[in-house]
Length: 385
Ligand code: ATP
Ligand code: MG
Image (cartoon, rainbow, N blue to C red; front, side, top):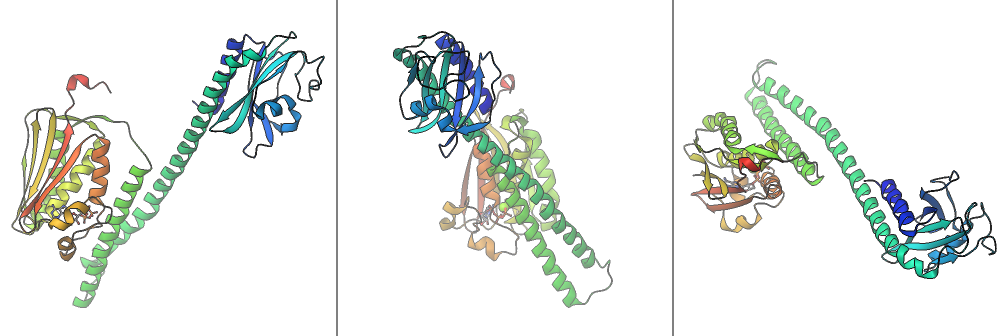
């Protein structure tokens, strides 16, 4: 619902409550100098909406905004001015105007009009004031929400542009350098080979950083797909197959202990994949040649566990509390010849929390690491979301 819809509901609601012939809702600008008619209900004459006028042109509103309700008994007999000068517009004769305030700030007025004189009494304000309070809160909340949505839209546009502008040139440069390294541009001296090899590793790092930063920014910007039922058996199998060639290339065994029961969690396929890729990739990356990585999917009551254990370099005790911090890498990982930005687990933590899961890390330096990701199990019968 946008602010205009909130205001229209407010005007209609106020007219019914007050049994008035017409109701106008006017809003004050940020400087508190001009008012504009924001919603109207029941007017028999055309009313201009949205155009703002100096507050002084609305003497009744001006007085009400000073803090208390104003009753106009008979516009013909009182000196509020006539229609067009901001008093009670023809054909109406009596009016009740209450201020709308939020947190001590005046944000506008609600005015009820009647065609007959003497229609409203001071006590009637107690009927209109609660509506004015609720209306003011709704207006402020809706405006804040709209601002937030605009900000999110701008952020996600930035992410889309940055994705394209940053990802593609890095990928193109990387494929060219790989081509040169394979000899497509002719023979190279050992020195040139070494130099291009280093460029290629730097580009890997840059590609990794760009991807991680964009993932993180996307998560923070609240770009959220709708959660669905994700079949974890398929997701884990997919990720193990994806990383198997990398493990083989390194001389690390990657074993998968599947689960025959179908295990379903609530999330997005993309998000679950990203969690699994990051955790299994770490296990392969930080396990030297000859080591083992084991991935197990299992059910523990109403919980589903994905356990990824490795016989790799392990994590120093001092580093454990920092693993989920953005850009943190333990000293033994940095000392290894591996590419990393220290953003993977920060992304994983955000996603796991989003899907109401938990992640724990147990490790001993030089012996290996076990990462357990736990999600609440979703019953297939409950999958109506
Ligand atoms: P990237 O952002 O490319 O994933 P990264 O792997 O260094 O870089 P994270 O995945 O966030 O970053 O992991 C943070 C740190 O946690 C790693 O740098 C490493 O020190 C440690 N770590 C994570 N998993 C393991 C593991 N299986 N074995 C040993 N150390 C690990
Ligand atoms: Mg990582």
